[in-house]
Length: 400
Image (tube, rainbow, N blue to C red):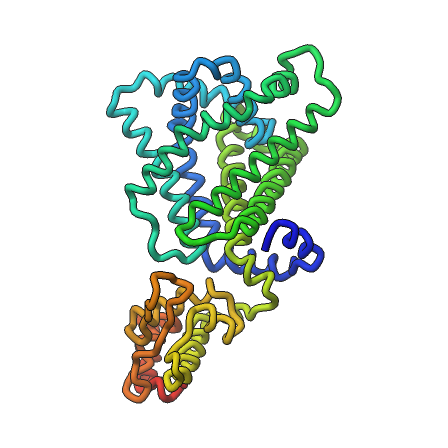
């Protein structure tokens, strides 16, 4: 699907299904906890990342005139205006002190910066259900290139419109009409491009460019709306300033970073689930035992396919037959693989063509291991239920 087709699909886009998917994934994938982890890591890594940006500008004098303007523009574009000035001042002060550290201190700071990008990598791969992330050395090289070349490429692209940038930030007497709006559009486009690249290249799985663009648009619009809402709230209800005084910048920054990461992760969910959303309605989680139900249905399908020529199904074929999303089915199939109840046939080195076949003997395989994994874990509270309910006497033949 190209960009024109995606735009044509917007009037028929399943907005309600998307909202339900976002709510379901945010709860079941614990994206709130992931956003909290990313918020903590971001606070720790903020100064090292800013130090790298300053070091890049210092190393290239041709960008020296744009350095202060670009720093202010970046902070004001990503942070609500009510705290951007304080944040910029603090970050510049901390980065200046960090530049005087020794090799050991700078090494520790860089490790915290890498911790942030590795956390982002792990979180996004979890959303896409990627089981094999890129090798650590490859990830480190890629992210090091992003951290060093990113600011340089950004400065090079913005140097073309340096007059526009300086005029809009009050460095000249007047701003020609429409230039401010043009710069705002440029800021929004850069944010969309950054999120699109994040969703397209970070997950270690193929992601269509149009799907990544849709997620980038969702994330960029969400961040802009959240920024305006937070700014309005702080203006109407100055609770943080009244309670925390001069220290109010820190809790406001924490709230904003958490909101930002939550929106970025929801944009990743939109990107990952967009193929299924565009394909039509899919069944959704109905109860606590949803994964156990999916496991039984998958085993039923695979048992029926045992007598056919192909012996099994790919994940996409199973998901279509069961009318569920492949990303919902993936952890269930992984559990069945770990139990050695099903296996993978890799005729070609491609996940999309990997077939799943049933290995378990339905006549002699007890259902208990699957129930303990997906339905009723073993504990002191459930011990009498397992014994009195005779759950251990059930076999696959009783439920397939």
